[in-house]
Image 1 (cartoon, rainbow, N blue to C red):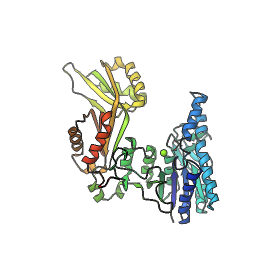
Image 2 (cartoon, protein in one colour):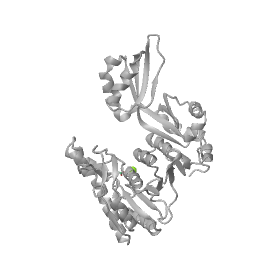
Image 3 (cartoon, rainbow, N blue to C red):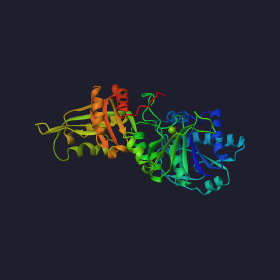
Image 4 (tube, rainbow, N blue to C red):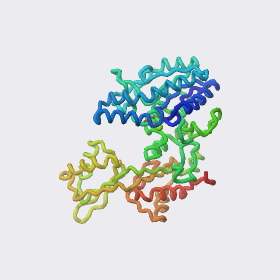
Length: 418
Ligand code: ASP
Ligand code: MG
């Protein structure tokens, strides 16, 4: 017997038939003798619909009331799943965020879970009743409803799994696992049996959007074994294994040796900014990135060129595309302090990243990347690295080509096209 948390995303919960499929999967785990809690998303498209109602009601609305509205999508699906399970003869009840409660910070619309009271939950689960919990929602200490940010049900599921000390947290979604890269770009992409928390964090934050990034960080901190699997492709009583997200220690040395690179991600939502003729003196860079940090704008890649004879230098960096307008505004306002000549920007760029814990113990990962790109005439505009990642900024039109070329260069192509 195991204690498991199952999480179903919006596509899995979209409509009565699909909820029946979900209930059958839950029943299968119950029949196998497991204690089960289920965390559900709203039906696909529902949260967007609710967000739109808030915008229509007033473009600038009270985030406390926004949370009341958007948390409703998950209330509906949790009740429907409990009804469906009961109709199948499975004992079940819903536990809304405020009923447990799931206590969060008061950062409405982007709240963080602080504690989950598991008393009622564990009592219910060990009596053989399935606990159905709406994802995405929680409660402040002064009893206001909160939501956790878009995609937050993944985080709810991992938090519940940590709180009830579940043996596993199975995240059922519309893809059947985590792939070496986007299979729509590379048909020979392979499904990964295992990926480490750190790799998944890098892959998630650079654009492989299988899980909400925060849920992976939480799983790493709390050591929750997460499995990503499909709720569609497999018979209910025999799910196809998905991808396990685990600690470094669970990936054997041999496996690490074998795969230098675990995956390749791409992100087209970056924008490049260049400031020309910035004075080459101490404090110059601080005068650029200080105001950006104060404006809460995340800077990713940074390059500073060598000084010109004039004693000035060009500085190039990237910001999220959605923040570009604010970044330009912030920099223009600080123009006199920074002392740059011209501000240039370009949104037709993409970041392509190779990720793998194997590169900790191997040299030459970056040079393989640069060589492979050079052979195809792809120009690298900026570079950034971490212990387990190398990213390059390239022309957006060359994204797909770059991903394909790198997938082959690191030997990730599957033997047979799937
Ligand atoms: N329903 C919420 C959203 O669409 C939360 C989730 O599904 O994870 O963002
Ligand atoms: Mg999701």
